[in-house]
Length: 441
Image (cartoon, rainbow, N blue to C red; front, side):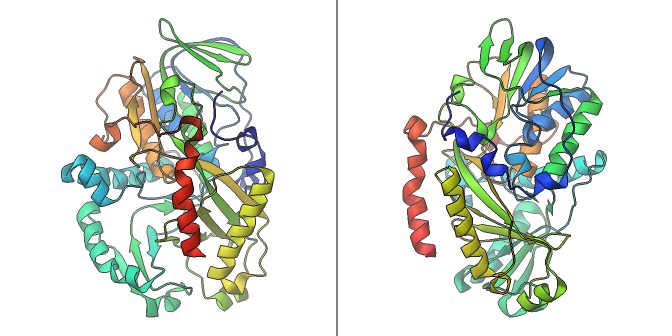
């Protein structure tokens, strides 16, 4: 395999203190062995791969999923659990310039469809994923940002057909949102959840529908001869079609087309012990909305149903045990600055995972050029809970040669370009990361 980060990144170190892993009992999955044949082979058992497997199995296809670890082991099982709008990190202006206004509006509609799609899957398959939060709340960290919320609310209403609610800075405390903020804007789309419970729920639903899921079965080689031939440590797989659903945990040579078309970067999360009522009252944060602020390296956080506080932030270009410790200290510093009354509250759970960025900051779901019968979906820019699940359903239709049942926006049909610098492409993020670090002190 040819990967961007050192081996440590793809091992258990970054996730060994992940809170979600303590909330589930991961079922036993067989390891792929001997000779296996199927209609569709899927590499990766995250949201995209599992959603594709579920929908293909429901359509009567013989589908096999090959996961290097266990379902939900990667970013799908260690993110912040924000099932919300997103998938692209491009601004409206950038989308308009690259694709035109009609395509921009179409993509925004697909974001809302993706969030509704994931919620429908959870309901349809009875997945107990600890849902809470009525949509998502954006918090302004400056008066200028708050002043822009009125125009932003109008754009949200135009793009998504919902009416957002505004809370002024002076009213935040009485809404249980006391902190260093100047206003709040809530869009009533999406829901917060336990992402690993959701991923394992998708795996269970896919298995019941007839999909075969193999754990501890990394694909080490792909050949295209009369279909696809995949190699794992203990199995040889023959498949008519292929889906690569590895996103930030991809390898540049599986297949070679993937090389430098994705840029993995880290997102970091801590979870506190359960807070008591006095601690919640002292800080003045009792709201259970999933929230994020409008900084370049946004903070995202939510008070969960069990009164633990989840707090995450983007950033981190290096990966090792020592860098993880340094990042934990950084995220604690930010957490304590935002919620000073909780400085004494322990956060034994601290972990990180890899999301993927595309050069144009937009996701892709479609065929792998020059590999007839092969498809991929990638680069959800830290918002893959909804859009990754949605992309899996799109791929399931495309693999079968059908026009997608769900809205398939033009923007997601544009294959990503390559990042410059090849395996050294992480260096592209050093200047903006350094600037953002200086700006936030």
